[in-house]
Image (spheres, rainbow, N blue to C red):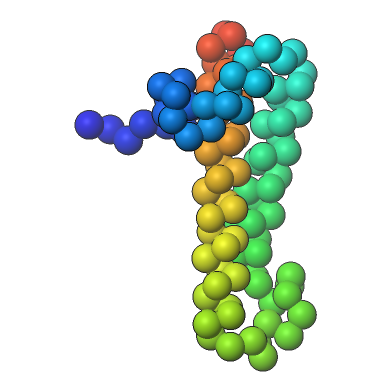
Length: 98
């Protein structure tokens, strides 16, 4: 079975179901604005993961454990924002908007 999208999971009452319910009643403009915001946040976290020294002062002086903790945190934030963007895209597609 193929992996379900975050939208499909939310539609089945799983993770992000509350967000899906909230945004189903919103205007297309509000959904598109939220989508852009989630996509920007995902891009920011990709940048943080690829160049952490640009975002954390004294990155090289941090312990490997601290570095890994930050990278793990940013990875989780990236995944969450990608999922939230997917939910927004699903709502728009459901309305016939690409």
